[in-house]
Each structure stands twice: as C-alpha cells, then as structure tokens.
Length: 248
Image (cartoon, rainbow, N blue to C red; front, side):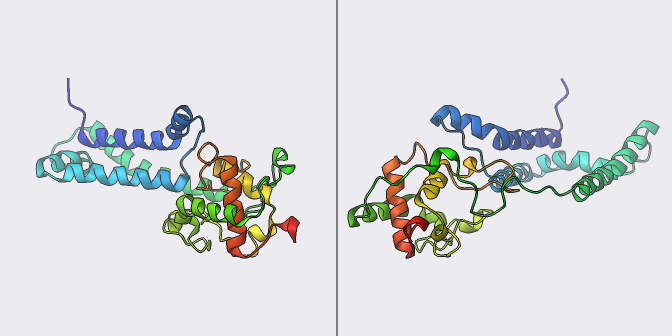
C-alpha cells in the first residue's frame, strides 16, 4: 500500500488535536470528574499552535524527512518539463481556490449583521433564579477571613493576583482578563450570592451568547466545598476594602 505523504499525515494529526481540544475536553472532563469543563477558545488555539510547532520540529530534525514533508507544497509551485493536462488543471485550481476561499471567509465575517448579545457584555450578568435567595451562611469572623485568604492564595491568586487587581501570573494568557476586585465597578457593585454563582459555575455557567469569547474562569463546584467558596468571598471583599452591595 502506498505510504501517505508526510504533509497529509501531519495535517490530519493537527486537525485531530484541534477536534480533541475543541469538542473532546468537555465530555472527557465530564466523565472523569462529573463536571463538563470546555477549554477557553484562547487555550484551544494556543494548544493547537503548540501541536503545529511540535509537528514542524519533528519533521525538520532530519533533512530527508523535511524534504519529504515539504515536497507536496513545492510540487504545486514547480513547473516540471513534462506534465499532463490534468496536473496543470489541478495546479491552477489549487492556486485559485485557496485565495478565493480565504477571501470568501473574510467577506462572510465582515458581511454578517451584528446581533445584540442575550446579556450585555461585562461582569454584571443576570443572576440565575436558583441563586437569588441564597445567603452566605458564614459569619464575618477573622478566622473565616483568614482561611479564605489561604484558599484564595492557593486557587485564585495565579489569575486574579495577590493584590486582587487582576494581574496574576497567568492573567495575560486569558481573554477576557481576570476581574480586578479593587475596581469599584466589580465586586463592590455585587452581592455575595452573585460571587458564589460565578465561583461555583465559572465560565461555563455564563448565559449562552452573552459574550463573543468564553471566560477562562474554571468551574470550582466539586473542587471547593460550599463553605470554602463562602470563605473566599469573605476574604475577597475584606482584602479589596469593599462591602457587598446589600451591606452598604
């Protein structure tokens, strides 16, 4: 049986990993943990890019494998001394279709009528009904706040920052950026049950169509207990120097 060209095999591997990252992670995490957690779009493309680089490195290590890898691409642009009419037609079709498809995709994106989101972009999404009547069962004691600070440092500071200013070590990797809790337009305008919802359900819990990109906020339900989430909330308000909206 004729061996598949390296370039075709590499393309199939790349497409396979993209499908895995885009559509396979959520059901896989659902089976393993009971909570479906899809990858943010930014991570999907970043991981796919890493796979593409790994493929290029693999084929470029040796000269013979690199020549075999790029041969189909070079054959498209080379004009051999003797070629069949079918080959010439295929070559012309490829050189015409690729830019036409790219232009068509660009036109489709630009020609789409803008649609208003189902919920305005930003942090103030509509609180789901099942969280409206929930109240923080824990008292605002120094012990609870201290324990919340420990939990925050372990689980939240890498993105939201030690100072809760949204400038954690991984903050630049996400779109949208992690919330700045010291900004008076964030948790100072919200109640404790709102924060409880956002921490518990994360980005996947946001209403569909609310933003054009997926929030990278992970789902903490099942990772943190309810009491641990409430303690983190106590710490976040205290350390940011603000109070929940209902307590003002």
